[in-house]
Length: 148
Length: 170
Image 1 (cartoon, each protein chain N blue to C red):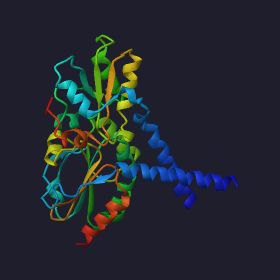
Image 2: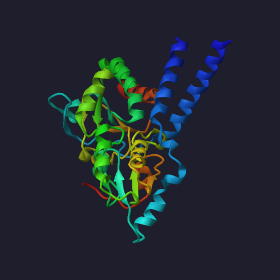
Image 3: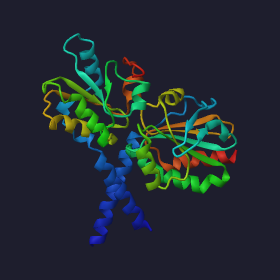
Image 4: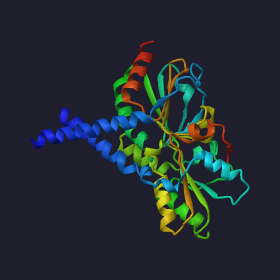
């Protein structure tokens, strides 16, 4: 019985880490909320900001000006992401974010980042959200928008 | 010898797993606590409607989740067990999926043999509960329809069971 329980824990651990790929995104590709705010308020070249998580979460609160493309852990979400960026110049400044789950558990952000690099985009940043969008963005009083 | 080493490795991995999860788990029982849970009527996954207030008299565990959310997936088997164990005593777990489409939810419900109702959530319902801006989020509601606890992120099944047993005993 104990062996079975240990085996189950190991399986959950392994399956969990199979999804926990956000931690493998190189730190030089990450951007903190505070730094993104500075860029958005700078008046300089504005990035295209894309949310790659849940539409219901996006409708409740999102970064002003950002667009919802779909959960990138799903085929549909990845297709929508590729479709959205396909016609853009490969040096376009793009910021990806999700915030559905704690960073180490986010299933969406790494597939989105991978897809962008497979498409040849060279100026992509990933917003580092340690806990979730509510805690690390909304609760900090950063600008938010609701609805579409 | 190999068995002992294997056991030790498994123990270390399991320890890392629980340490890792405990870092992401937080509980906020202040927001909305003791207020009547906002009522809603949402379509059930297969057919019909679910109205939350129709479950007055039962202890309700309202779980906001999504099929692609890893902690949500890990919690589901525990919820199935809790529903089976405490259903006769008055527990009703209700899943509110925040997926974009019901198709993967139907598949998930079948795969995990979910034994409680699941509805497709909306942004309005999420906002009514103070904003569902991270998953999973679960609310424990007493028999009078008041929110008694809010659990954000991966939460140990024993925490849910303790809260459920306490409310069932009231």
